Image (cartoon, rainbow over all chains, first blue to last red; front, side):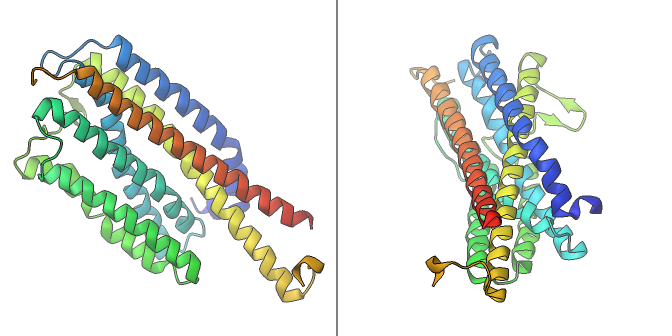
Length: 247
Length: 46
């Protein structure tokens, strides 16, 4: 793991992986969504709205997965001072927030025809909304730290503390009464028929590849920005490299 | 399942939100990366 802490080595791998992950993710997710829309039959109880499963569930998993990534990277930053850990955590925040928002909006759209309401303040929906607010707070704090040059340790601590919400989201439908159904997929067991389960897993694979590609692209952007700023600082320190434009 | 609602309207709305959000995220991240790397490379040549 520490072998990849070298930014030059990481960039070499990231340059090679970013496009295949993004293109592979788009193709696989696109195929899975077409499968879910056009091939999968309507459900006996939910009718055609069951097709929302193939976007809502991967978005929920990736929304939680994004914060899990932030928490692990934050721990690595605090304990091992891994040079790329802070960059990885920051890069996972925006895609995590987008998928959490997609989960909330598609869940609300799904709730109207199945539950008869767009929203209820129950454990699952509320804890997912809290996750979105945690993401927004993280992004705002990251922006403020970049602007003011403050220590990123406070951001890592925020990432670790916020992780407490992930198991709460996961267990909320077990701990509290809810309109939301109990977990259909647990470790090694699924209550979903293979007709729906297989395209769901393919869609999850596609969206996960996209998530990975986006995180790599954002890490590359952050690294390039830091390298450009370091060069500017070096030139300012030595007084070299500035033409009349900078006078 | 409540009667009288067009189920496909909800399905299409949910897919548009998910596909639009995902594509916007991919495009934003890709363009930000290209812009940052071009800026770094330009500075390296100076």
